[in-house]
Amino acid sequence: MQVFRIYFKIIKKQLGQLSIYIGVFLAMAIMFSFTSPTSSIDDFTQSKTRVAFINEDENSILIEGFKEYLGNHSVYVPIQNEMDKLQDALFFRDVDYIAKIPMGFTKGIIAGKNSQIEKTVVSGSTSSIYTDMLVNKYFNTVKLYLSSYKDITQEELVKQVAKDLKIETKVQMKRTGEKSANTGNIKYFFNYLAYVLISVIVLGVSSIMMVFNNTNLRRRNLCSPIKNASINLQILLGNIIFSTVCWGLLIGVSFILYRGQMLTTNAIYFCINSFVFTLTALSMSFLVGILIKSRNAQSGISNVLSLGLCFLSGVFVPQEFLSENVLAMAKFTPTYWFVKANNDIGNLSNFSMDNLSPVFMYMLIELGFAVAIVSVALVMSKRKQLKGS
Image 1 (cartoon, one colour):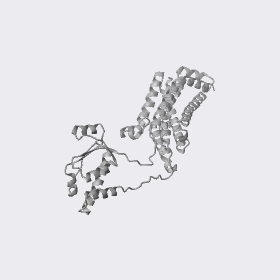
Image 2: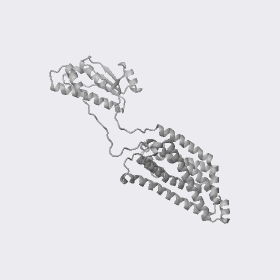
Image 3: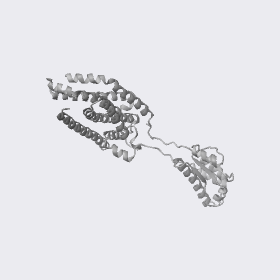
Image 4: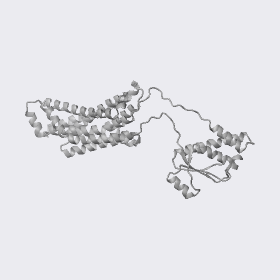
């Protein structure tokens, strides 16, 4: 097993450079995973819109009733009724909604006219839509009472409307099936795993391949009593052990950081998917080791390969934020399917075969990439041997 021992002597010399990538990954994983949103939506809490209330009409009982109702669902921000100040408040997001009651509004409503509140909102604000719903709800109820009771007073009108609008429907959110585990942190961790696996395995394996692919060394090995098949087998075994050790080390780190979350069914499939991707990274490393000839090229290709694939495929930027054109290109990379499998695993609560089938399909696609890359690498290796280089 002379070749096998030499293999790990070479790896030992690369530990300093490899540890840098592992350290960077751990820092990124801890930073991003602990700041990522992980809470599940089990309850609804109403958010209040910041509203500037401007009354240019009389201080009628109807207006006061409406102001009190709107204030129960909003936060009033005092602003002077000046165009510049109101525009500045909207621009700097001090308010999201400006409700201006025009002169003659109360008399128009009482008379059955289609009087409207003047509003100014932040463009594209969803909170303004909710405030519009509150305004419409209040005055639609007012109009309903006015059409049904001709002689109703403002005091009675405001009292009845307030009573009706206090009626609320209690909503209870229930989850069907098993409750899904809180997998937000470990999902991000395993997504970022793609970066360090590619970087570390490419650097480690390509370093070995560069040494044993050296023309002079290969010729000396051909003259040695060790068969060429034995040399290749020992190198292959070393590559598999090295990649598996890297994968196992990172999985061990995940148990240290997320002990509770790793004791779930989701975590088992995260680990399986990451091991499949480790084989794919190993195949890429094998190809890189055959193609490159210098240390400078090794570092450059490792960085371009790891960062490029991770940025393109949804590791650093979630796939839902990437454009369709970028995703169309990303589908031709194994990292895209690795991240897609992780996203599906993170959302699983029922581990039936129907739910797991897409995940297994993504893993098979990753293995397909590995087989294709190894095939290309073998062809390139054979061509180099025929050329004697």
